[in-house]
Length: 462
Image (cartoon, rainbow, N blue to C red; front, side):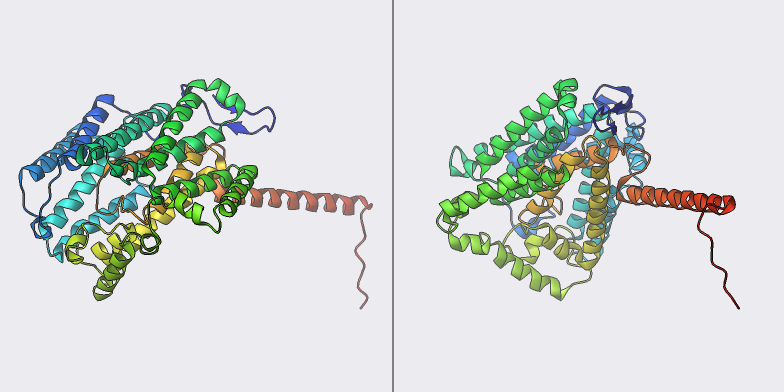
């Protein structure tokens, strides 16, 4: 049942639990299949985060006991996807979405094994990404309504954050590393921006009617903000800030933007030329570390020269550690990871995915459906954070699960409410109104001429 706002007259999205909240794109689902897929995904993540090992860069394709656990988890997830039928149903629902371009990019990553220095490793890593991407999206598709998928997203994001904090304490103990870490702050920024955007997008009447959802968004949002402040990651904090600004713009909360501007100005003036602001955004970092990005800019400059040597196809998927000569195991930047792994062709495929995803997001935010404003803010935080950490390029970590689940929630369980969709729909609707108004004016003018009361057309003398 569709609700109507009595003050503005516009139709509002249905609340959770109503029949209209069921998405027609999701035909059927099994919570048991979703739990099995999540078990395989988190088994792989727990192995990589808590049972990691240090090995030479040259031994990437050596299969040891740890790698055998990874392969078993990936194969089990693939087995569940195929024999449950979730693989075909999920991608059939996503065939006209930007997710197809992301899958196409990873297919090209698998093709890169033909020119990779470690062909077996590049092929397996691409296959692993395709399986885990499909498994996460298929798990989201098992929820038949938006409310259940959103509730599962909040819980999974919270579990991912707690798991990363525990893994950090497991590895380093209660040292300063726990209070300045980027492993769990990426998930915190995504969860915080989503909860903030969705909570602010709800009116007072909606919060009263959907009290459980509003309390859940508030509760998980506070948790995400606390863990984001605990990690003190510069990239995640800046990403969350950009996400909040986009949310305020989307909701036209200009007074919040004005408050944020004055707060930033006061902090800048209070900090005697920005020194306090620098310590706030970049805690525990010296000026040299800020200028070089803790050594990242040196690595990026080296990788850029390597890219210019093979600009078209790159060096093969997942080989940043080998290409950098052991300087780092990953590039700390999604763009450089794509450039080194798959070259300009991979950049084009990934750019098409990003552009189409942003266009779809803007179109749905225009219609103000449930889950759209929060996703836009989280997406902005994700892309900003990708400039300092390659979340979805060649490393599958806990924040990758959080982002892909949020992506599935947006593509599978959010709909455009109304007869037209997005910016293009508004333009088409305006053209129809203009055409009808023109026809009405012409008909009125013709009636006036026939009745003789209208203006007479002067005759031309020859």
